Length: 356
Image (cartoon, rainbow, N blue to C red; front, top):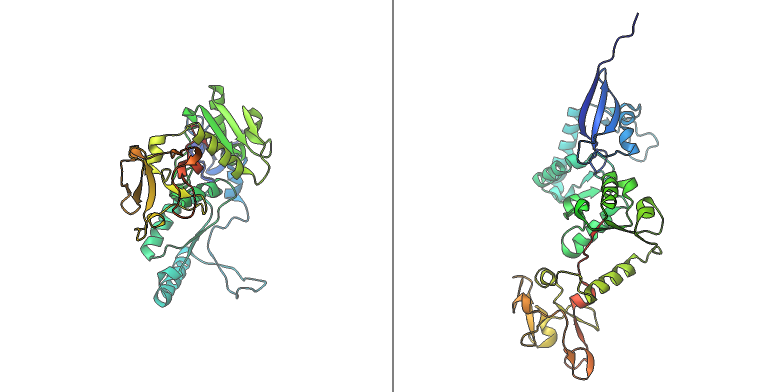
């Protein structure tokens, strides 16, 4: 007697176990999820990682939580006394506690918490969590982030308002690896952390893209790099400032963009490293920042509230004229002997490669 032929289905989708969203094909045998494979027809389906392949084990693992648990003993007790409750009971209890706290202390006394979108499937729900927070009236969110690209993305968000790479709520744009002539992987090993970037990088190398890897370890794609910069741990900042200095000195940045959309033209006091303000030059100044207008060789103000310079941005100097017989800038602080330098000369510029 022959065995019954199993009912096997192939279901196209994507793996949600991290932010990469790799295209996949799930095998369902007799109604049971048995296998996950990459979907080469999907834009991100060239490969999947070990975690994605282990998806069936996660679904059917004996320790997987499938229903809410409620603590029945005080916090600190060696045995929490977890008991299983229904979803309706859990939601009612949570909603009642939230209302009680809001009535007693205000909605901002409540903080929401979620897992990391890099290592869980929360990203598909994160926008709805934020909507619930807004409707409830609290801005407070506690979220776990790994030691990966999040620090870099949020650092630039706090410095100039936008994440350096796409980081969800932090903004930013993902590097266009497919169109890049040069790619920098800085402390980033996509072979382990974002396999879609690894496969895109390998494809770029095959068409002639240059690769620079900055990492103390020869890890991941470092062995395929045109340049591997083996920085000592903790010296990344010095390398970044050195690269920025070279780019500024050689003009490897969009000067018109920097003049118009950054604080590059603003003058900096060399004694304090702070931006020069009008009250530093004249008594009773309005507190506005100062730039140098090259056509008439004069200091002009910048109003941060209005976002406008006193002169057209195209006339703002990137480099101050030298004093007669003396190298360096021409503007000296009255009575202090303090030289002034445009911000762009100190630390601003744009890198012509893509960077991750």
